[in-house]
Length: 321
Ligand code: F6P
Image 1 (tube, rainbow, N blue to C red):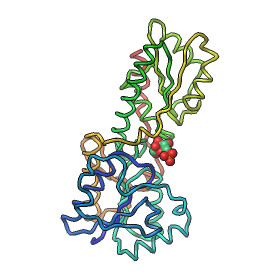
Image 2 (tube, helix red, strand yellow; image 1 turned 45 degrees about the vertical axis):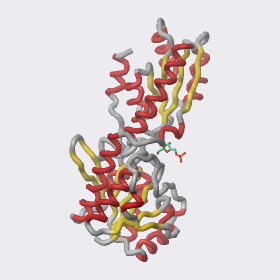
Image 3 (cartoon, helix red, strand yellow; image 1 turned 30 degrees about the vertical axis):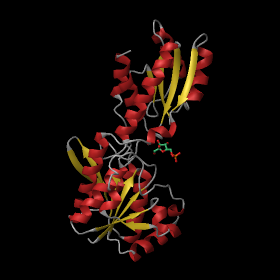
Image 4 (cartoon, rainbow, N blue to C red; image 1 turned 180 degrees about the horizontal axis):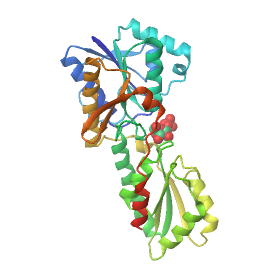
């Protein structure tokens, strides 16, 4: 193993830079050349790469985003696009490719390994935390903290004005951010894609809960079956006459910012672990963290399965009303 390619793909996530740093430094220290491609798979197609050196990864452990850039490449979804990528990886003497991203990134890595026989390894990097085979993905903890900070602020104004706020958070079709931010911020209700939402029951609950309270917070996962925060607020409005309702969509603020200590540690450990897996001949896998252990699972299972949040947390929320 002389040259390892590296991409960050899909949506960026805080901690990706810490992972790039760990992989780069470890590779260089053991005589492997780390080759970073810009903007995910698109950079491989367009031959945009850099042989990473120590100075390239100085002072990036604390930075959000990704110095390599990230993208969701449409061209790579085509056979012709992947053929170009494969030719360029061969031309650049890449012995293995490390792909940091989410399930879309892993589906791409899987296709590459099937079509060209290059060893690939996935590292879960997504704020959505929906990757099977790991308790947490890089970026999730930071996003959760960003969300909680925003909810705390909205709570201040909700309480001041006796308002009910519907706050929409990211997560695509997974409810990890929504459910856990709801618990951690003391929200009154949460709507997640993993549970069917009942608007009548929500309005009834909110009226009940609002008695004697100076405002309520409802967290809405962006992928909820009843719609986003604005839509849900509009559905609830006719059932809640006399109440002051507002909505807020937190948006991409959730993807940015300095990675938390947890994400820096996770990213660093996973980066070095991934290189070690390649050196010991293990590939076409995704690395993960279960409890205190670093683990591996097949890339197929990571593509086919989606992790779901612990639904017993919904009951916890109800117990704390
Ligand atoms: O997968 C990360 C994520 O932030 C999701 O939570 C969200 O649905 C999506 O990416 C947004 O993607 P984009 O930045 O392309 O709009």
